[in-house]
Amino acid sequence: MADLLLSPLIKIVVQKSGDSLVQRIGEMWGIDDQRKRLHGKLLAVQAVLTDAEEKGDANPAVKYWLAELKSVAYDPDDVLDEFCYEELRRDAMKRGHKAGNVSRLFSLENPILFRFKMSRKLKEVVGRIDELVTEMERFKFVQGRQGRAVHHVITHSYVIDSEVVGREKDRENLVKLLIEVCPTINPMVLPVVGMGGLGKTTLAQLVYNDPKVKEYFNLQLWICVRRV
Image (tube, rainbow, N blue to C red; front, side, top):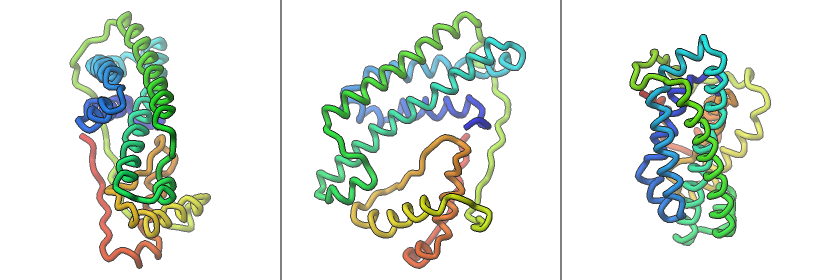
């Protein structure tokens, strides 16, 4: 997400780490202490981020710190997502859905091994952010400054297939999930996640306009949600 300002990215992770659903999942998986630490550290960063981004234009040390923070900021988002997806998978299994179908959407793992691996990953992420917060203090950033305006791109469902190269297999996989797998497990959301610039929106447009999808669904609606 090289073209994305750091402030919106941090805001997203702050919201997710403080979300009530993530909190409940954290309590169930025994990671809520680390989640709370993560949330607190990110709030501290968010409070000074506007000043830091402005100073980074003239200060190479601050610019490097921001780059490190941006690199790390994706990790807690990914870890929290993995816990949420795993909880969703297990909930589907409890309701009697076949493992063969569910496993196409979610990875199957021993719960003890999953908890150990992911808890360690979250602890490592919190440790890295903690180091950046400690380093942040030496820059003496000003808290609470108003940020620069962020311009949001409005997307639409139109796409020219001939101009898209190398996404045919991904499209086929998602279309198959939508019309074959999803009806058997009834998920509310089929997420497409990844770093910015990978073509998530383009892939969604390709799936939306696929003839099989248009034939299968009676109603289609494209919604672009603007982040504030």
